[in-house]
Amino acid sequence: MTSAHIEEVINIVKTGNVLTSESDRFSYSFDGSFGTFLPDVVIQTKSVEELAALVKFANREKIPVYPRGQSTCLSGGPLPVHGGMVFDLSVLDDLLEINEEDLIAVVSPGVLTANIHKAAEQKGLFYPPDPSSSHVSTIGGNLAENSGGPRGLKYGVTKDYVIGLEVITPEGEIIKTGGRTVKNVTGYDLTKLIVGSEGTLGIITKAVLRLLPKPPASETVMAVFDSLIDAGSAISKILSAGILPSKMELMDQASIIAVENYEPLGLPVDAEAIILIELDGHPAAVKDEVQQVSRLCKSVGARDIRIPQNAVEKAEIWKARKLVSPAIVRIKPTKISEDATVPRSKIPEMCAKLQEIRDRYRVHLVVFGHAGDGNLHPNIICDKSDREEMRRVEQAVAEIFKAAIELGGTLSGEHGIGTMKAPFMEMELGAIGLDMMKRIKKVWDPNNIMNPGKIFPEPGQKLELS
Image 1: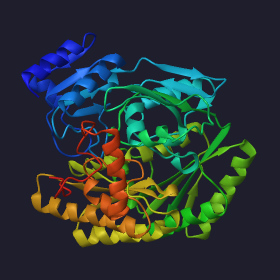
Image 2: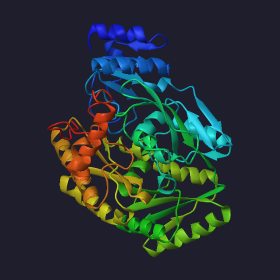
Image 3: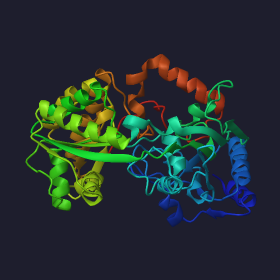
Image 4: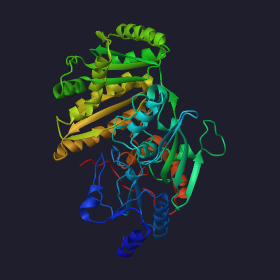
């Protein structure tokens, strides 16, 4: 951007901040993935009209625009890979309304997801999507990436709860999609198209979210296994028995040991895997399902079943799962968090393939995640200053993606594509499928200003983690 461009931005932003110092711009050059890209300018404003005017100006001058929330993204979603303008949408956090009669929440994009959970629960309601980063991630980022979380097994992902949006188009117009009604079949479903488009089709400035009545009861079961593959089989067996838990989380031995070393919670470190299961609904039904789940796990080799007897014990069990991410980075400083997802029936096979990849490339692979919906999180712990190790890690990550797709799965269950998975898009979609997506992008954003460099691979682009 030229100094005249910066001057024009300053003229447009009457009510917010325009950050141009190198230290400020460096603060917006990274996210939770890899790579550092310096923007030319960062804008913080609560005015949607100012943001729209900035987009109109950017479109005219062909300046890249990068919307950004709290940058907890693990796939490179908000990285300003071509410089230009970063819009810090975390400042747009004033609107959080709960409408009990219509069972909806109306929110601005900078609101933290955890605050939506709290506000809904105060009214006896429930916003199901619960990404692990919900205490720090913004709803705008969740909408862009179509985030999931442990409850995705029973309740689905973010797009299943979005019924209306206000969006700034890449040409600087403000449009509304959907509305406040749960049923709406008027024309193309632009709401669903925008949710999960990773900021490449527009900037979300308001969202209407569907809420549910809060389930009256919930119980937790921990099942301990001496075989990771048996644990995968137990997951399939429970789901095919007609039981649909709200959460079904897997931790392999490496993650169990890491958590115990980080904060001793009495986890069985000699076990090859544990499954954490949450059942919710009517108290009598939940009680019955706890017994059924326990029997089914034992029938496929669970050596121990633990059922917490009070809220404190229950919280301890779920704390163990939440601690996996901070625990594993104490082993080595660099963490590659993947979320390749496979059909539920293929979970045992994917577990076996992950163990094979770990051994073949001699990498420190930790497997945990939302196993009930096939959304595993194979994490590789490494040191990015060790070039030889990082070369092996890159090969292992590529093999993980390939294994997931060969088993009928997908590159991403909830983290998005961003920059990291773009080189593998054609492997999953095929050349024509990818081209159809590119055509949609071209029609919506003819000058390619909206979050360019994401989702679609650039010529010769490869996965680079160093």
